[in-house]
Length: 72
Image 1 (cartoon, rainbow, N blue to C red):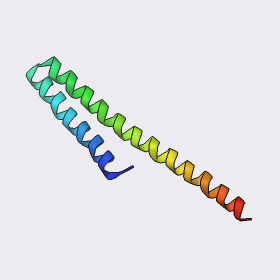
Image 2: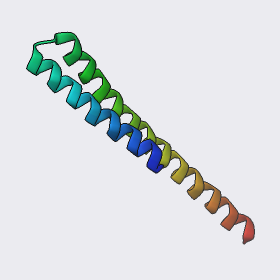
Image 3: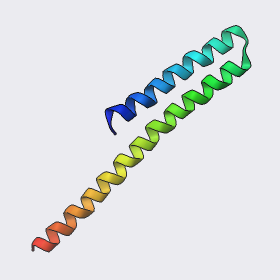
Image 4: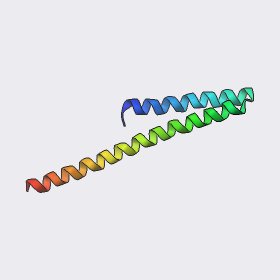
């Protein structure tokens, strides 16, 4: 996962939590819901970045295995 993707996801989670808490404190259900949604979006960004990393890792393993077999 790139640092930018990781930081974007973390930033959204923190921003969402702050917004959600502000909504709870002020009794503003809309702000609370928006904050909750932003936090979930941040988690989704992180999970997507992790999945991309796993796919890239597996792809590289397959390529390496094919190269090894071709070299023999």
